[in-house]
Length: 159
Length: 151
Image 1 (cartoon, chains in turn yellow, red):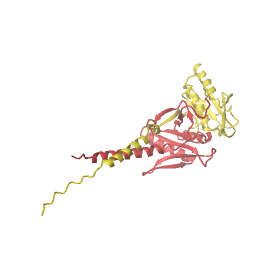
Image 2 (cartoon, helix red, strand yellow):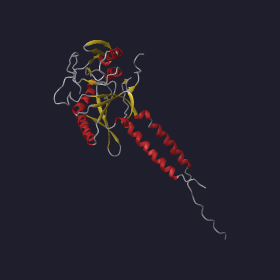
Image 3 (cartoon, chains in turn brown, green):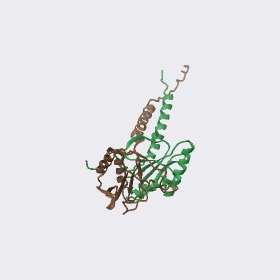
Image 4 (spheres, helix red, strand yellow):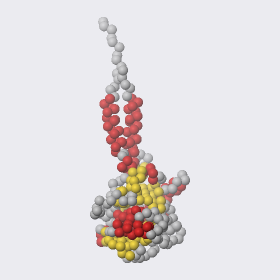
C-alpha cells in the first residue's frame, strides 16, 4: 500500500475578488467627486436687530433699495432702484448702477435691501443679489412682507 | 510562495463602505433642484459651511406656483427626506441653533431653492431664520452665467 501524500494547504485565490473590489472602489471614489461635495453659494448676514425675530421692528435705511415686480406669470421682473424704474430683466444695468455707487465711494458695508413681490421668481431675486455682490456690496438684506403695488414702500427690513 | 491578500481586502472593503456611505450622505444634501445661476457664487466645500441646516425649497405638485420645504435627517439607519411645514422650519432652526450654541458654534442656514419657485416661498424660510435668530444665511446657486441668458 502506497503511503498517503500529505494534504496540500488550500489557499483561496483572492485575485478576482480584489479586482472586483478595486472596480467598486474606483466607482465610489469617482461617485463622491468634489463636484458633488462643493456647491456654489451666495452668503449674507441678516441684520439680527430687525425683522420678525426682533422685539420691535427696526427700519433699515438702505444705501440702495432694489425692488422687483413680477411680469405676468413669472417670465420676468421689472427692476426699480431707489423707486426709479431701471428696466425689465436688465440685471447688467443694475450691476453697472451699483458699481457706479461703489466707485463714487459707497461703503460696501452699507446695506442693500432687495424687496420683491411675492410672485417674483427666485432666480430674479438671486440675479439682483448677484449684481450687488459683484459690485462689491457685502451687506445684502432681504425685505419680507413686501406688498405688491407698493414698490416705493420703505417698510422693508431684513427677516 | 503565495501573497496574503486578506489584509488588503479588509482595507479595501473599509474604503468601499466609507465611500458608499459618503456618497449617500452627499446625495441627501443634493436633491436634484434646478438652482439659479450667479456669477458671484463661489464654490465651497460642504465641510467649510460648518454646522448648518440645509433647507431645500422645491416645486411641488408639478407646478411652479406651489413649493415644499425639505430637510434631510438621519434616522439612525438611513437618511430620510422630511417635508416641513412653515412652523416646523422655525422649530427646526431654533433647535439646531440651540444645539450649535451649546458647542460654542453658530448655526448657518443653507437655502437651496429652485430657481422657479416664487419669492414668497423663500421668504417663509427667511422669516423662520429671523424668528429663530439665525442670521448667517447662505443661498446655493450654480456658479457661472445663466445659460438661458443672452450673451
